[in-house]
Amino acid sequence: NNETFGIGGIRRFSGSKQLSVYNRWGTKVYSNSNFEGGWQGKNNISTPLPGGTYYYTLAVNIDEEEPLPLEISSDSAPVSQDYSVPGIVTFLGEVTIIR
Image (cartoon, rainbow, N blue to C red):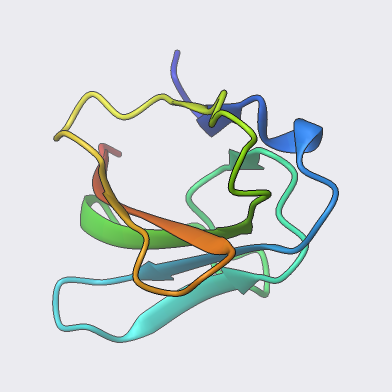
């Protein structure tokens, strides 16, 4: 149950979608420069990460007039949005892996 961290609607964006996941010490444990909407709690060599809380950033190129139809499935905490870089919205949040 709930084995994939999902982001619905991300395929609607044609540009870059950069997902980075960090452990509690701030070490990047996963990155994907062409993220398409599902992360299964593994690092970049497909090794399952230990249980715990992880922090992510998802940078998406946007057209400033286009609405953001993303649905981030994270039960752990609210997701914040950063618009400080023109043409890019960065979602920041956390996800908990329970093993």
